[in-house]
Image 1 (cartoon, helix red, strand yellow):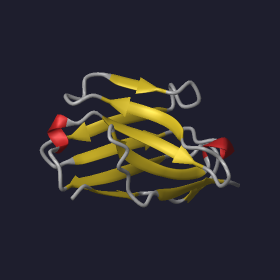
Image 2 (tube, rainbow, N blue to C red):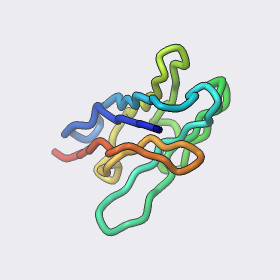
Image 3 (cartoon, rainbow, N blue to C red):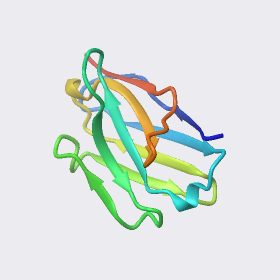
Image 4 (spheres, helix red, strand yellow):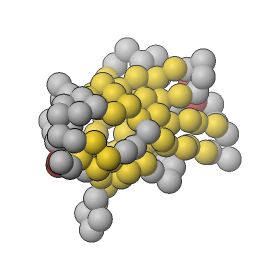
Length: 113
């Protein structure tokens, strides 16, 4: 059974940083490209970032490019999102997601002064 558990969300001031983590289990993590997506109430899921199986190919949405860094530790079945220079518009619930659409319960990021 696929299980994804996100953590690391918090309330942070504009310009601050956070590191989100996603612990994966129940599937062969090393065989999956992984994604970060986010959602605010009343809106659709927004794609944030993608990292390939080996971790050497990364893609970012224009909204976060240059500020966020995605990484993975295949030995530990972990996915990460380093978020720098956070802006109020980054406020959302963040989810890690597999290609098949499985995702966890999410972690809340709130950027506010």
